[in-house]
Amino acid sequence: MNINNVVLRRMQLELKSPFQTSFGTQQEREFFIVEVHGDEHVGYGECVVNSRPLYNEETVKTAWHIVEDFLIPAIYDKGEIKHPDEVSEIFKPIRRNNMAKSSIEGAIWDLYAKENNIPLAKALDGTKTQIDVGVSIGIQESLNDLIDVVEGFVQEGYKRMKIKIKPGKDVYMLAGVRKKFPNIEIMADGNSAYTLQDIDIFKKLDELNLMMIEQPLAHDDIIDHAKLQPEISTPICLDESIHSLEDAKNAIELGSCKIINIKIGRVGGLTEAKKVHDYCAEKGIPVWCGGMLESGIGRAHNIAITSLTNFTLPGDTAGSSRYWHEDIISPEVVVNNGIITIPESPGIGYEPVESLMDKYTLERKEFLR
Ligand code: OSB
Ligand code: MG
View 1 (cartoon, rainbow, N blue to C red):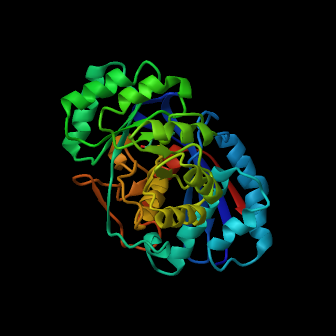
View 2 (cartoon, rainbow, N blue to C red):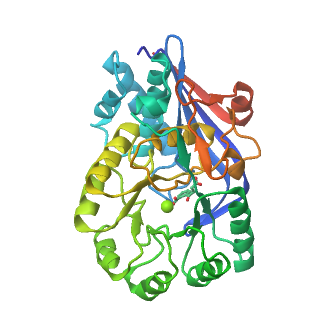
């Protein structure tokens, strides 16, 4: 692969409705797109970082700085790259900054798949042709509001409802939803808002037949989660705590979780995400693909990795229309009865629309080799 030029675009999209988690509310989604220009094709990646360092430590500004000043130069210094698995090796001396690394690595995977005329899913050795999807629902003002939102997504066919919780908006809200919908798949996401002191809350949630509870305890913890898991029969799923294969190994070894949410950006790219997937498969730990309120470009990468066999649980990869009035790709991501069909065209399989890309671009910078 020859990489002749890299373009960064800082963009902003407006969410259809505000998204509230235990760490804050979001209406605008600021992020950036990486384009890697080869001889004949362009590969696209999305930096799924947020404007503020509330989910993890990176921000749009820090990630842009790392990509501009360290990662692009590292790629240009390397000379020719034959396979995208080499990218994580090239980035190894640079500590963490996983979302920054993942953005450019993802673009190089897309370019590689396009140059080989195969779908990204196939380049990753994915075999599924369709994937099951769920939806992530932000914290709502009232139980009635929450029930209305859940009802809408049940009607649309989503395979599971992930409901965000925080202290004061947990047992009451979830018990109310469970009562109204006795037979649907429900899970909770605590986004690190609790401690072991909250054991009574977890015991009550444990009675609601939830698929899992995602990241209830601290964002950097695996010890307390290992203490909590034996106290409840609902599986714990880790999100924030897992940044690498190493983290996944430690968490599984300690018994901190029974399920892992894989986010490509959080683990530093598709190569590492695949490693986490393969290890979990070996250990009998099911995984699913988490989302970061991506545009269609990041979403396309999520869809591609979900084609791997051990992604057995529905992910957060909802359709474009769940988030945006208009997405920046064509076709948009469509969910039919809770299912997305994996595209068969080369690369990510959805074409960024130049005019829409320009419409939502706040800042564009080119880095010629
Ligand atoms: O914890 O999974 C999370 C969004 C932003 C940051 C963290 C999380 C989320 C979501 C949304 O849950 C998932 C999505 O629909 O993209
Ligand atoms: Mg989460």
